[in-house]
Image (cartoon, rainbow, N blue to C red; front, side):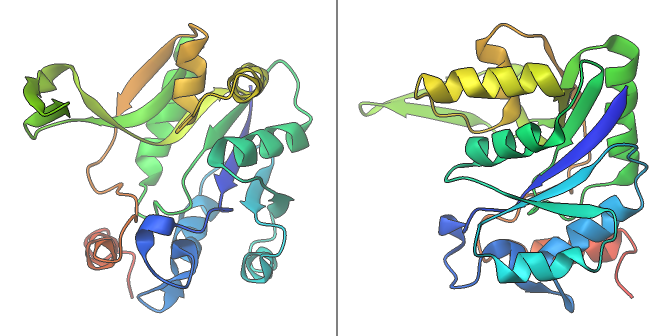
Amino acid sequence: MTLHLLLPAAGIGQRFGQNTPKQYCPVAGKRLAEWTLDLWRGVAIDGRRLLILREDDAVGQSLISNYPKLESVTGGAERADSVLAGLDALDAGPDDWVMVHDIARPCIRADDIARLWHHCQQTGRGALLARPLTDTIKRQVDGELTSLDRRQLWAAMTPQCFPVLMLRDALRDALNTGESITDEASAMERLGCPVDLVEGAADNIKLTRAEDLALVEFYLQQQGRLP
């Protein structure tokens, strides 16, 4: 089982509300993407490592030289398009697997990555890091409010890990039918492929809005990653 890594970074982060794409905003003296790349540099990956960028992304291209094992691939308009471009670039075989990780999740822990990969190796099933929800969740439809059973609800994280060829086919099928795919697991689920949840650390947050920056820096400090 050869393991590859895809890091989608072609988005502009519309909800972030800044002129600079969120993956390049400064956090504790580095760009956010650098914190993510620094963590993955220490993870044993025997396959390829692809950073998926916009075509005109000079900043992203400049990062490649600092990470010798990292290659760049041009992404697409949506996340699913970018991930599919990365999967096509791998030219993988039937025993190849891939982890897809949000570039805007710099606080991912190496031991969570290892547990996820161990789970996939032992079971032969695709899986993703996730957290059980602790808040009371409300759903409002046409003004009618209902409460959902949080015992059955998990928040999806990354990385998400699947066989390359299965994920490629699942994404192609979803895109061909015009369906909105927000993560890799949802593409696999719609084809009936088994997907497992592996509980991950709560500090593996995704930078979405500008106010999240302080929390990202706090977690990096708590992990001992700041000088």
